[in-house]
Length: 232
Image 1: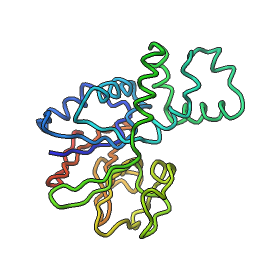
Image 2: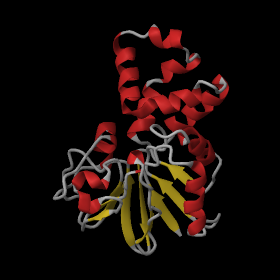
Image 3: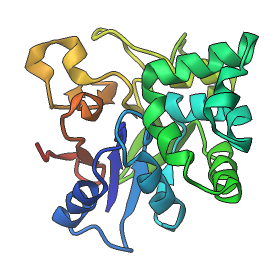
């Protein structure tokens, strides 16, 4: 079975493992995580290190991982002095990350060895922006935030990183007619309280960010039969 989740944002690691156990996730299954494992919650790096060891789990890059990569100059030594010495562009990159929940990740990284942080950064640099796959005859595009500047006939290679990581489509947005685009990034309750904690399913796309960043539980979507699993 093939499962998809997104925007864990440091969701408690033990609860995350309980999610997977509840659907009997095994080495014969595969899980795609559509970015934003880190930040806001304290277990983001713990989940990320677990992902790095799993042969049947793939992380797609999210905007929070991208902000961490953009702040890689921080990781030679994370101290009050090194932070206080930042100026110009580096200061802007750092403050943007912290303003978006990066402090929880920085706190964890500050107690880790530089070599281990380097392995994490190397892993994140290899994470793809999107994946395409076919499950039971149905075609899917998986990415973090949908597709910014979408245009029919435009090749995926022509979209920018920003298009894949920072898009917030409106409810009447339409993507490919013959491919189901699955993404997170925008918590579904942003579209209205009637969507809180639930996936939004349209005829061309599905938003599966059910609000872990706001204290709710993430969900799992099983692509084999499009069954939705909730854990709130």
